Image 1 (cartoon, rainbow, N blue to C red):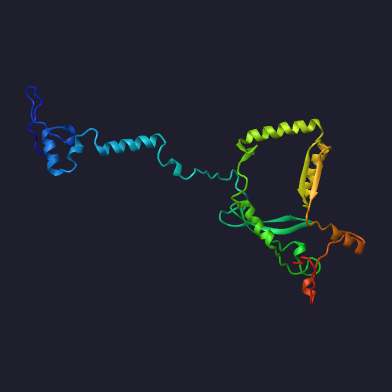
Image 2: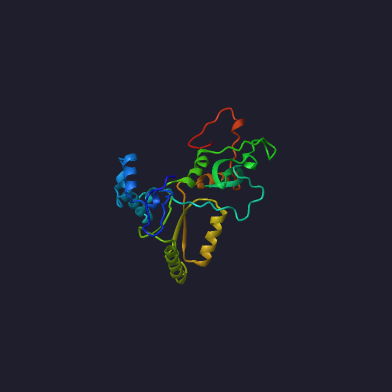
Length: 267
């Protein structure tokens, strides 16, 4: 590096060797060098508030203030690991659970496929006795389902499902809803449930029946109504009158040569 003939002014001062342009940013020598090498952007080296510097500082200020594209960012979602890994669980491998879909007059045995904790497919349970074609439990298994059972999986992913708590048409916090329910429960308990009416559809669910008994035991003056537009009460009464006891028909359609159905859904 060539020495620059610049002296500090003190006695005995020798030549000063500069390692870079940072030692004398505003010297005439550096100005001349910058104008010769970078004539288009030479002024930005010495202008303390250039256009580029202004834009850079404003962008940093807006980012720190939370303004800009924060509303366009993907929402933060946290995936929590298992606190205790289920025995035999492998990520990505489907698991199957035997369940039942409540229907009027009974239930449909189904087999639910689950991928990483999310139900993804419903099929008939081939191991259930109702899905045996032959006599008894020794016949071949088929495990079929209908379109209602197949489509029921979509209820879990319905975008129009309730996602928040509302009170009088306004979105409220969960704590307020619980407080309102507790206040209403105390008022009903003082009247033994008088003025409370519950309307449900006709579903043979053991859990729903247990809840009904517990509720009426606590509030005996409450009313419980069941409404089923397509109730099979007439069919049950006719079968009981014909066979002398409550029975349910199981159709052996594979044994029939011709089938005449009069307003009856056999399949």
